[in-house]
Each structure stands twice: as structure tokens, then as C-alpha cells.
Amino acid sequence: MLKEQSYCPACGARLVERPLEGEGLVPYCEACAAFRFPQYNVAVSMIVRDATTGNILLIQQYGRPFYILVAGYVSRGEAAEHAVTREIAEETGLTVERLRFNRTAFFEPSNTLMVNFTAWVGDAAKLHANAEVDRWRWFEPADARANVKPGSLAAQFLNAYLDEEENAHREEENR
Ligand SMILES: [Zn+2]
Image 1 (cartoon, rainbow, N blue to C red):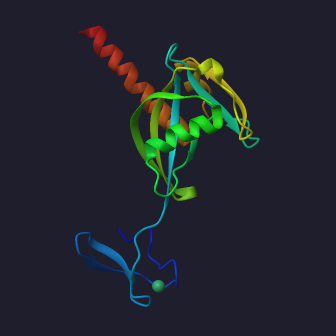
Image 2 (image 1 turned 45 degrees about the vertical axis):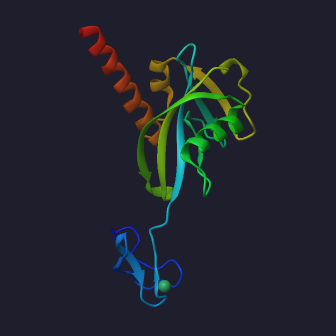
């Protein structure tokens, strides 16, 4: 547990582990006499789908020439599900009708736990991207796979989700 956060963020002293009532062993700074829970960010990543066509929205941002998923940070005190609908509304003006949790992954470069959802929107044609989005496009699932940035976390989430969906279809057909 101490592997990722071995030093006190306030004074830099090496942390030890100490039992905390109801929490088990928790990193502790003897210099500050304070428990130091691991700190990291939480963000949501969304596979936005047109509820009518099943097409998937990919976007380009910050001048980078590759397609990724819509994503954003969860605010302190905010539920991840709320962050999903809020971020999609802010970045695309679209309304989430239904969402499904997919999976999570830790993204080391930004010290962030990424929580991936699928969000179905009923008003895909009304998409109005904000200034944070350079370019956007709706892709059929196979094209989304082909166009998402290779090797990215977005690709990992999207491919895992589409693999599951294809397997489910195959099982249905074989029944
Ligand atoms: Zn300290």
C-alpha cells in the first residue's frame, strides 16, 4: 500500500504504516503526527453513443491530431455519474439518457484513477462542441476502433467495451 506514496506530502518525511480505527493500516507521518491517505485524482472517461444509431463519438482536443474519448475530472464531493452527465453537457451540449459503468484504470502520468462509462445520448444531432473540442466525429463501432489513438487509455477502454459487445452478440447468435 505504501509503494505509491512513501513520503509525507506536507513535510517530505518517510511515511510508516499505522492502524487506524475502522480503516486498517494507513500511511502515517511521525513528524506531522498525521495520517496521510494516498492522494490521487479521479476522472471519468466516456464512450458516448448515439442511442438511435449506436455510433460512437470521438473528439480531438488541445491541438492534438488524434481521436480520443470525452473525459473530465470528477470534482471533490461529486458523484462520478454526475461528472459524466456534466462533462458531456459542457463539452458537447448533449443529454445523457442512460449510462453504464464499464471499468477503471489508473493513469500514472497524471496520478489519476480513470473511470470508464458508456453514455447513451438521444440528441446526437444537436451536438454543439465547446472551445475545448477542436474536432469531433460520430463513428460506427468498427471505425471508432480504427480511429481512436492507438495505445491510449481511450483505446484500451473502447476496445475492451467493443470486445465485450461483440462477444455478447456472438453468444446470442449461437444460442
Ligand atoms: Zn509530515
